[in-house]
Length: 429
Image (cartoon, rainbow, N blue to C red; front, side, top):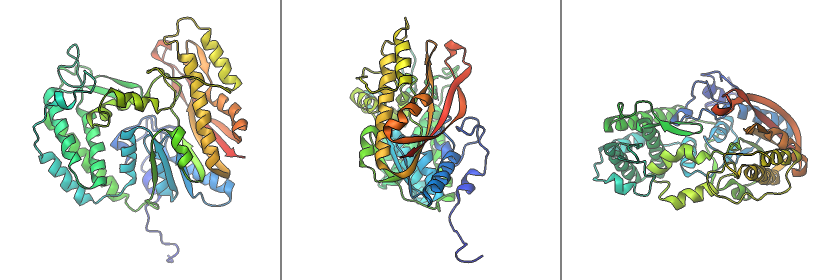
């Protein structure tokens, strides 16, 4: 082997070869990869999609891809995969917990320092009143909760608050960030609810199987040990730099540099606010201090839900969108009267996002975008079709539209796998 052939970096294949994705579109049913098991994202797309996008875009450009944007970074799959592929990642994430989780994955820290700080945090004993510490959190957060339903027993909530404050005393910024997000993982392990892609529900027989303070400590230590192993094993990625922007993607995208590629999946127009999925981490770790913070965060997300009162004004909608909105307006008894307007606003926001991406794309640069259809009262909202209609007016050429999987409709509609999830590929023209 010559010097030129020697590559000391961990390759993308070294990271992903440990498992074969059960579904090419998402992580659902697949074995978790390193970094992905810090906080399980069942619906996140697999990193192989990023590899494909980088390869195909490089072929279209006639040169290697230099950088790649994910404006809805979520679990951090795109920027992390880019580091393994030697591509400069640019990410935008509005959720502060997810932004910290992404940055913790992208950063390299000293394992010895992490272990020492973790030990110090575990050994810190502070006298914290959990009801005072979480006074502005939802009323069901700490025992006794509401109607005897609560997420954390009082002693576990007290220990959790103790650990949160102890982590805040860690002097190294990267280590503090890592410990904070891993503490969020531990909090999920011991709370009285389980979290899925659409919110949370109380565990079966949770009152008879209440988690303990010792279990919280153990879950935290185990999460740290696993993360340190991942960081150490994959520290020599081909590119360790990154550009992470925190805030509303509709606004932040104007501040990014020129890009070759964008790979992302926006929230789907299913009336559900994805912020709810992360409420336990957001409140328990102190990202949200009160109701105002919560409303501000929700208002900074795409208008894909009706869980708060918002301005749903929109214009310039495509034929497919106008047709769906018109059909929805004709439905009697929608569970929320704002759903038709929300659908229009959702596509208006997608247009803002795609227009912003187009302004930053080089000629022949590409967008790989995973989207999902929705259905309300039997009325389909064909997202992929609508984006294909929007593309020319946004100065894109539709390169391809291919199915990834079928999503299940709501249990009220039988729970059948009928809603399409689609990969849209666009090229800048």
